[in-house]
Length: 279
Image (cartoon, rainbow, N blue to C red; front, side, top):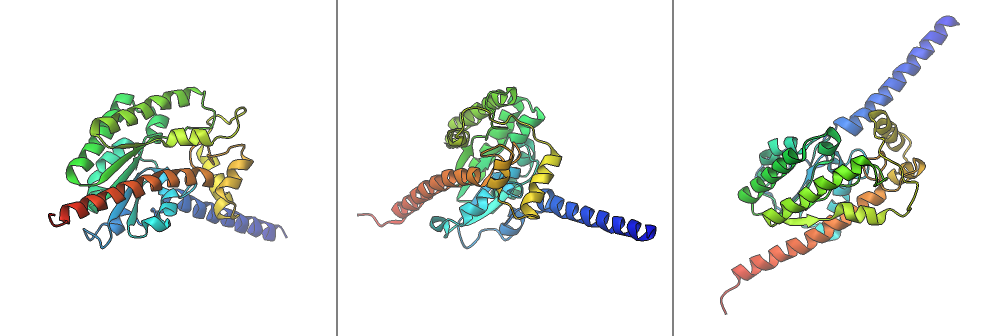
């Protein structure tokens, strides 16, 4: 009997470890859908490319996959949407891979949502600004892409914490970088704040990797939506104080989708005008 109990416990432990490993892979290790290494390996593609560059919020394994939602929009059916999000990336990381993951794609448009990990890791603002400027300058000088810099979502939904007050300076740097480079600025932070319905009792930032793993387990093992998970945790737009719920992801997809539709239509009109015979 004792031996059977030990064997049963060992099997249970193995099952738990196996499920934990599977969730960990799905959440932290698997590559993004249609990453640059796959999408851009052959040079120019048959369809114009849109590259979404960033970190885990762009990769979309933990929280809403807004890039996939963008890809599914009917008005973007004629474009290939490339997910250049990598879990854990900072501006320094994106700066190192800008040639392989953005420039090599020969994109028609690029969105850059990067900096959450810089804020969390305490990267000095001047260093963040220098990295962001270098990324934008490289894309501007090596491609003809339309470029949009996207402001950072809050960290936790209590906007009055020291962390969110510090984050405002990084968002100001994003807006200033867009103005200097004469590229577009997309006010995601502002839209998300507008989307917070409650005025009091918002959850302050309390991210941890055990929480992220627990959140992912609910989604991947139990089939719960990101909105359900966020709601049960007392949050509206962030599933784990960092990553987006379904409603938060829809806000990003709408914001970027509207920009892309406008900007890419402008590009088509410009190209048509250049090719038109003289009157």
